[in-house]
Image (cartoon, rainbow, N blue to C red; front, side, top):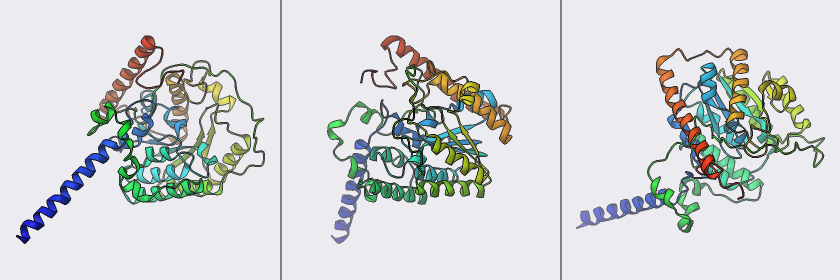
Length: 368
């Protein structure tokens, strides 16, 4: 009788655990439809980890402005973009730390826009990144750092809600849709080695000036320098070249005083720093703000990302002596599959633009 009671108790616990796990899987956002595709990007890395000579770390200014497919086709450089929406530097640091558990790239590229933020700007963007990470001691530290950053912004989050996301998403019943059923157990791939493609065109109508809120004596936050120091040391300890960049995005505005601080930091630590907003780089890369952006200059579209990749890829290969790996037959075959998917998505988006006026599978209507 006692044994039967124990078995019933164990079965009850297991049933509860299974129901809890199923509900959690059902109610967590799937990030398979616009405008939330960015939430699917972090977890895609694990199927592509290893063998990348270049890894990009940062926000939308990397995952929408550079194309790993182009880097491969032009220079034979295998690369991956570990990007996420509104990625803060403490998140970038822990993503890099996690990446080094899977591979040791020759070059890490970090976009410096996040140096301006000393606190969380959006809790949902925290979730998009952290919920996609696999559990490890690094993720534990990343969650804690994000919670501390949220507290600095007056936003309360709990560690337990990251351990059990159902505690955060239990009220999503009214938001459940077809994606929640279709992608309950598996997800489609939304990026191309971390690059989030957009082929539509929305030109820059004007170039903003720094006349408003210009922080002429503004010092970038100390906490950001702390994490940049950690990133620099982590790369140095692992024999990795760290490259700092500022992507060619018109907004948010990147002030000269911030640019000067990054130049000084790079010089002091022996790092390369490229501000692709500089006229010299814009001219050399061929970026045209009338054709190479899909949202008025906040991000580049496909043609812009490919131009930037051709330009930056040459810099990377020549300065850091990166090998051309296209002669590796097995690797070339793998990247050919990636390229086939890349061009198929490009064709899909162009077909949707022709039929609907915008890429319906990848974006909200222009008027929304």
